[in-house]
Length: 55
Length: 212
Image (spheres, chains in turn brown, orange):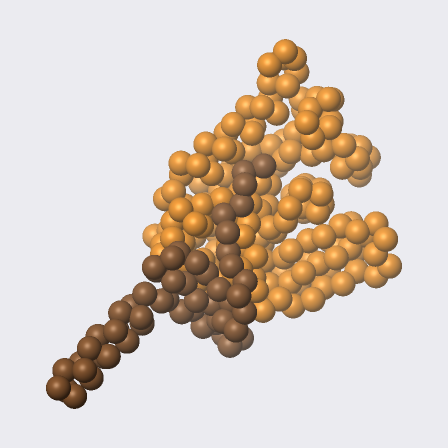
């Protein structure tokens, strides 16, 4: 039973990891992209990228 | 439309809208782009920041214009693809450019548009001849003209902050989703980014020539 639960937890972790892309730059700053909700965030903040209007 | 003089500004807006809305083989960023020695200088900025004025000056000083309005990043190669067309200048910027560069060809000056008086500076011969030649992203400058600025300031911007600003200035980042993130990450890895606040165009030009 424990083995089954562990495997389920591992699957869940994989799903989480596969849903997020991370870019780490040379200056050590980084950004995350969620494949699930298509939001982009600076690591450590809640800033979100949005599509601007065409002016 | 009731005034035929508005035709060119409306046409310009329409062309930009078509590119931004349908050319999704590119990541399209609202920015001026110029090139020197194969390296691209990208200047994303909102209207009123002095982006087009600075772009026109750099072109007159020998930089090759790729676009004054849209930075097109090839999703496959990552190269910056030229979108050469006349530089759109407005109001006081028109008068200043005419006085600084009397030889520059500015056409279709139209008063009374929604953006005020608009005119179009023709691209330089170098810019036309290189219109098929891509460039590699090297610098991103966020310019801000501020008449009250005592001293020019040039401050480094982290790559992640630059990424977020570029994403927010993109027309189709949200449409491209994962592809947009990957493309912009690759571009951001290649660039140094700065915020430039200036009151004097000569100082801004001198600083950019030192930096790039």
